[in-house]
Image 1 (cartoon, rainbow, N blue to C red):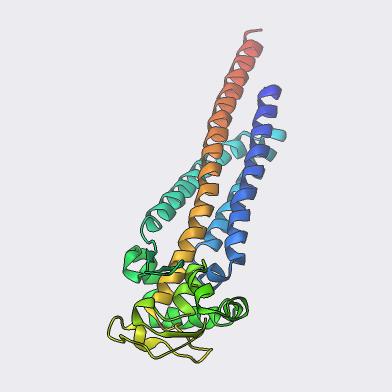
Image 2 (cartoon, rainbow, N blue to C red):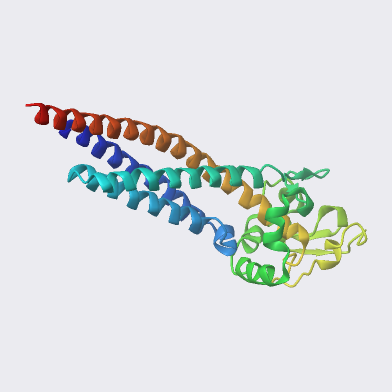
Length: 269
């Protein structure tokens, strides 16, 4: 029984360690400027990681002090958390499976269309109330101002691989035919009817294309890239947790079997 409890304790210690990448993924998302403005995924990930840490700690204590009811509670709670983590992994994959940039002639950077993304993600940014808050947050960053410092010539800017938010929020859509002055100042559009965003563009450095659908699409494209990276971490951790849980269940069953035989022998003698 003591050996089995030691094994269970060691397994729960590993489960505690596996909560760290989950919490870390949530903290990393929270530190990214776009995710810190949207605030959708980071807190559920952090909370789930903390819950796994607490439940694994409870299992470790139950094994160390040989508290059967605490071990049973651990097995039930950890199974529920594994299911929740699996659902989260699937959800992230499903909502990020759509949405990619398209190429424009003579441009290295990509353009983004809001309708290319999943409806679930679009609903996070389409509400004017939600977008006003997100827009105010994005406008406080220096992501657009830094383009002016980095690119002076039009061709250098056209050949640049800027990120999706910069492409969608800091410049007008390419199809509008604006003339480049600097990365955040454009004049003389050729075709303002090409897209509603062509009319939304403003040379006011506090406005730019923050009111454009292309800005919302660029934000979602950036979020998609970051969420997919986080999803890989969560998937690897999920597989490891499942393996740890299965081994823990086997160890607990063996411990119970040993306990039954020990009591049987004591009764027999």
